[in-house]
Length: 131
Image (cartoon, rainbow, N blue to C red; front, side, top):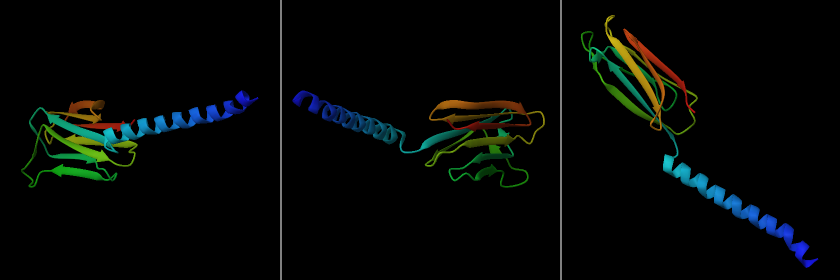
């Protein structure tokens, strides 16, 4: 009877140890990821410039890079990295080449894994759900 009385305690002890190990693994993964999701946006154009580039910022708003003057442009290739502390469900990046014959290309990476890629004339748009 003494043996059977210890069995539930042994199961509880094993459960507690398993929970502690799991918590340690989760804490390590979170620490290695820096506590947030890193999203990198990339834009290229065949002309080497764009009139405007827009992207989703860390607070879910729209960030924008555009020419300072009507005659100016934004140099490409262009990239920006944004760290989302809170989960982001949808991110996007777009480019307008300002030239109907130029090709625009955009890419979105999450933690260095490409999740979206698009090319089109006059500009491009990439949209993706963050895994």
